[in-house]
Length: 608
Image (cartoon, rainbow, N blue to C red; front, side, top):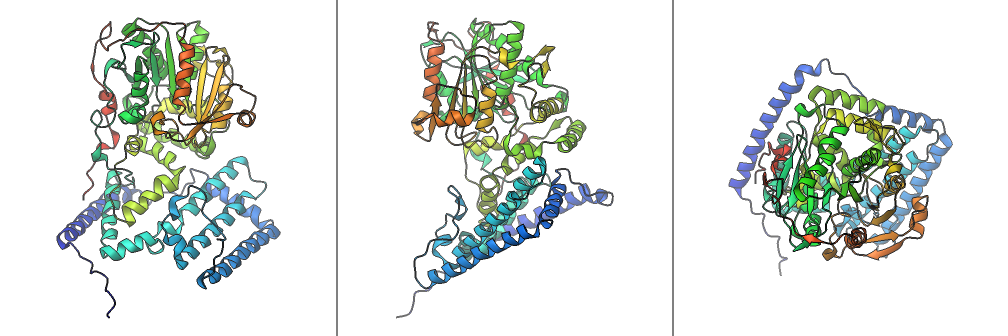
């Protein structure tokens, strides 16, 4: 009986011809744009080392060569591991069960495909790569005598190099890509090339990887849908007041100050995971600051302007909208840094306008900012200031790229594989839609923030910075505060946020959530995901806090609400407030025109 033959590959020739045509047209246009933009400057272009990478690695090589014994020892250990792998691979090929010599770290999704374990060749490639990666990173981490700055850069960029060389990132060594190439007759690679060219066009000559299908979302339609109204605006922000869903509400309104690196609606993605909607349903009168997307006209807006025209202006507007002089504040990330400065400013002025404050993954101490510190030193900041001063702002995509590279396997290489090697369009995902909706940073504000917070760590020093003529002293902030940080945060490391929490002079409740900077915050109770740690004490070190902390299942949202209930127990609830029913009148519907302005939007449609 003849063996069954594989089904022939069917090709839609008309569709493939259309893809070829688009590839040709896009290639010609991109090459022409590149020539016009770059060739005239190529003769005078000079090689620079703005990040200080070359200097750090030259220092590394010199110190490694100065210790040949250690270098020989490292090489021998790696060769021994390869010998073990070779032996184990032969045993596996002969049908014996053997333990892997090297395994991916928990949570490493690059090698999930079954062939990485079941197929002898791919299993060998995977383990060979993991052995090399482990030894390379161990080798650079063990070199003594490097400066702290060089040590951080070497470790970070070595990891980027190792991640980039993973066999999963190449068509000929990724089993999933090979299967797709065979089954589609190579159409995936042609479509992937078209997707690549589309992303280069989208980035106006630079690669800007599409992470989601942006056509699948529309603000006010399927994201940022909680009913509300814009009731106030300044040059820097709009203030949104949300429609109540309860007949009675807490006396003191709740105002949220998000970061201005991205849009506020991370807290209002969908009804089922919207913190804003959930807070409204708990009986809070919720206001949120929606920051403008600044251009060159706002280049001279400083950090103090974000306080005066943002958080403080919101306080005055809310008093007009509700009649209440005191509020409950929330600050998220950079918004929490601003909140800390605002509270210190009010304390110095003797103004009792805040009942309690909550900090979402917020840095008040910048002594250990994690891997972001790799990008912040005198040379890099000076170079960035030069670029910002030329145009008046930091481009949002540049900031987004920096954050993405901190988690390159999840936020870069996974999309390279999906979009360019498999030739698929990115999946519609609301969180990644928000992530791509980046905003600019005014030059003066961002320079002040980098130099005084990240480089000099002056916010925690009494009088270290002055805003609007007032020396800032966080220890004078004596109102109750709630800090929620997350255990996997790569932007605001929890041990650093813990140190900042201890700067405040009032009672502080510190809570540690699961997951990271976004998913750990946007974690509604109904999802029943992750867990969180609590501790009624606030010892000197984060390690001491964690040793005696209690792990609890689910979302920290309910813990926060219980804490809020206790902070607001003395004030009876009042009839629900509707936007526009007092002195401030409705300007427009939420999410408002400031949030609707989308940078990426010279947004070109990705062809099918």
